Image (cartoon, rainbow, N blue to C red; front, side):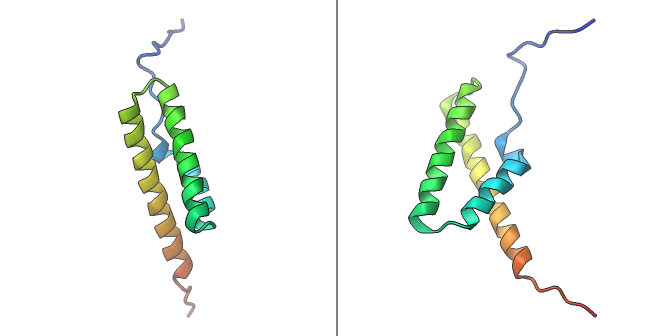
Amino acid sequence: MGRKMSSEKVRAFPIDRQLFLVREVAAKLGNLHGETATSFWKTKAAELLDLIVGTGRDRTAAGDEVRRFFLAVQRELLTGATVEEVPILTA
């Protein structure tokens, strides 16, 4: 016997925890600089905001989620830069 889920109880997985998306955006941003990077981020942030609002979240909560996503992207950029800069030592 199947149960029908109420749409009020279904919640999308937060975008800042979608590792593939975080890494994809970080990789693109890592290759951009200056105004090009700013423009890319503004476009992506607006796209994500619209996507989240489209799931029924209010704009304030959606904006908070986009900010958490941006922090996750920044952490990924820092982690990637740190990993790449550390030389591999062999014995």
